[in-house]
Structure formats: structure tokens, C-alpha cells
Length: 134
Image (spheres, helix red, strand yellow):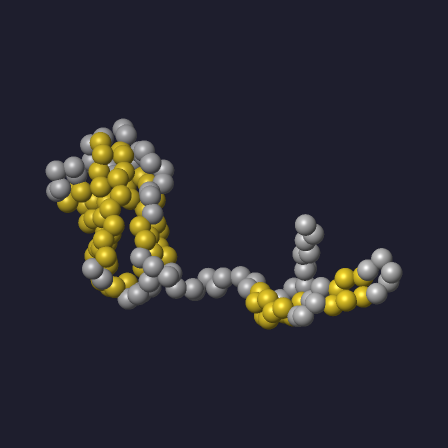
């Protein structure tokens, strides 16, 4: 199998065709094919779906990063719960524009243990587990 890498800069639609040269010197060209080339993703691109990512680091002491994304304007809440279902911190409760977000969670004042963090937006919900180790 042969491969070809085109280093021509720039995106757009490019047309390619193969040229075969036989041992007797005759040349044959294939029908052209169209290839759409994407050069990058805009910094301002809107996420395609709602998603809550696993915090990092996990386990942590005393801070960790929580990343999430929303795909449409939403009233968003992000809360941390203990294993008995009690809210121990409300990290976010506001209207937000579509996008990818990251926030720092500082667990100062909480005991070591397992907690849950829950993201809600436009009727969608996701929950992940985090571990605080002192």
C-alpha cells in the first residue's frame, strides 16, 4: 500500500487524481476525487453536546479542576454532595452561554472522603465521583 501526504497549506476543497505509468511508458489517470480539508478548529467553536469530565487530579488535596461543556444557552448548576446526598458546596448556579469551561474546586474545610459532583443544564444531568484525601 502506498500513501501520499500533501503538505500544501490551506483548507478548502481539493481535487486529486492518480497517475499510473505502465512499464511500457503509457500513462493513465484516474477520475478526480474531491477532498475537503479542515485546517483547524476555531477557539470559539460551540461544543456539540453537554458533557461533564472527570476532575483532575483525583484523588486531590485540597484543590482540583472540574471541566464541563454545554452546547446551548442554559441555566447551569454545579454542586458537590456528600454520600448522604447533602449539598456541601454550590460551585455554580447561573445562566451560561454555550462553551467549554473549567473551574477550580477548593475543598478546604471538608473532611477526607468520597464526594459526588453534579452538573445540570436544560434537563440534562451528569454526576461524577471525586476523592478528597488529607
